[in-house]
Image 1 (cartoon, helix red, strand yellow):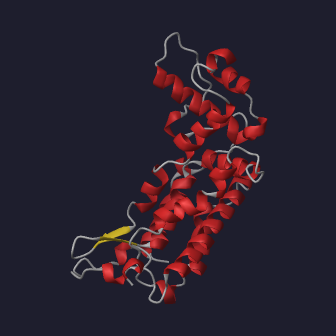
Image 2: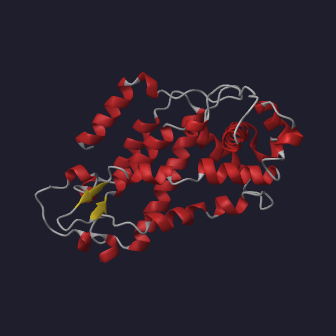
Length: 265
């Protein structure tokens, strides 16, 4: 394990603020749009404020009850308006689900965070990316939003049913993510082709999803430490040495690295 990763693990253990909270039907927070408290009805609220209020309430309730268990009355009770008034802001229960998935769950935030600090700048000014660090960043980001992981687990399970309104969203999720990941300039081991990289991407995605489910169910599990142990197997040192993290790139190396990326092979 490289030193940069060990420092992340040490910092995680030292920070009491990073300890996740247990998710229950009484305590769920959602990104920056959720206060962690029940909403207090205000006499005047802008359209945008009401939209965010509804979005936060729906995300909290969906993470606990799922789509089939949630009612619009649940939402109206949570934010202190009538169900009839709720229809001034949404068209239907399905519309509310789509709003949560597109505006709160499936955003560019996660991808941007994962790409942050996983790139090195080569001598010609091109960015090349390091996949093990990208995966680590994905885990670090998701540790900050356990309520979204629970939302994913609940809804993706329900959406196995073809009649579920989010069925297409979840069945297409893997390939949508691959389209983005596959377009980036990755520094990968010599000999790895695009098909093999797709298989690796699928393995890693499945592993992270599985570890996160265990993490939600078991308070004693340290998700970061579990992932670092797992990554030692997925990214063995004899194959990935020098390709783990952009900190391994020698800044005095003035070569253009694009010919070494999978896209240029």
